[in-house]
Length: 250
Ligand code: OAD
Image: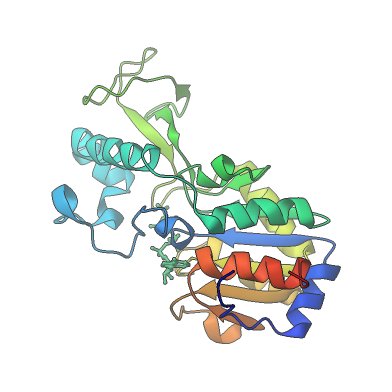
């Protein structure tokens, strides 16, 4: 058994053990240890000269659908070739250990579901669901390098993710806001907390009186305002947190 390096304060252990409802928000950092680059990491290889924050926009797609489609094909392949990491697995375990857990993710990679998490609220959509750019309808596609055309209107098909400037799917927004308002413990994991409305869930939870916890190896815009900050990678911190809180005699 490896040496424990994360110190879990007693008050945090009690809050987690006693929680009737835990709300978790995850971001790209949770998938970093699986090999999926975060949005703030510089891209490598083929895509080194591109800024994801420009590609992930409706304007970017309208300007060059083939370029944006190609980038998403590259990301789909990358995600298919990786596995969930111990951070994803620990969150799936927490799902089973907690009285109630709502897992809201900004990630579109499906790795939480592959690790066994149930009822994941996909705040920014899903990389593997395609939609008609004009009509928004879900369309089955085959990845063959070219952006496919919609069988109904003939227009381009886009990945079913939320781009900058677009609205969050209403169901996801409603479920996430309700969870932030009613949870006893709110965990923000692997997110830079710069993109709203996801980053605003923290304020909702804090105003409603939840115990707030951030897990991140780096400082974020919101770090100073959390009740507890566990500094480190989620693939290491989360398994240690679960052991310490729910299996203290190990
Ligand atoms: P970011 O790329 O903005 O931030 C990733 C965060 O993960 C940073 O705060 C890192 O310090 C942290 N991090 C890195 N490695 C980590 C690790 N091993 N364990 C834990 N944390 C780690 O990603 P998001 O906050 O998810 O939106 O970005 C939010 C949204 O902005 C994304 O969903 C996407 C993006 O552009 C859209 O595409 C609409």
